[in-house]
Length: 151
Image (tube, rainbow, N blue to C red):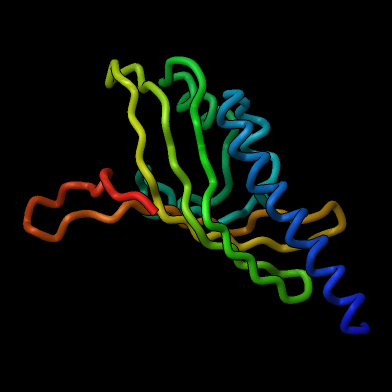
């Protein structure tokens, strides 16, 4: 593939990958469990904030149950994404901000987390095959999550 053609393809891939990540953010806002699950491979390896340490695949009913624990929309802002594409594989890292009002808290919350996402391009486009999100914690003995950090 020529250098110019390769750059166009890489730009197209990056645009498509950003659209996948943004679609998940929009689905959170819309509280659309099927929309959240759609871009994930059925056997995606997920290291999410919720226990256990590892999840395999996303289940629409579990995502809907979580969405139902929130009042109103859930904000998932995406920031500072870096995307590297090699053939049909992509690695993405950046930050997500989660915001909204959990019913159990009774007040709005907002915090940033780190995210690393691996995607694979199949016949139907880019699909998330691995995602790791985390919140740092203070290592001063308190083990408090560092919800006050911002990118």
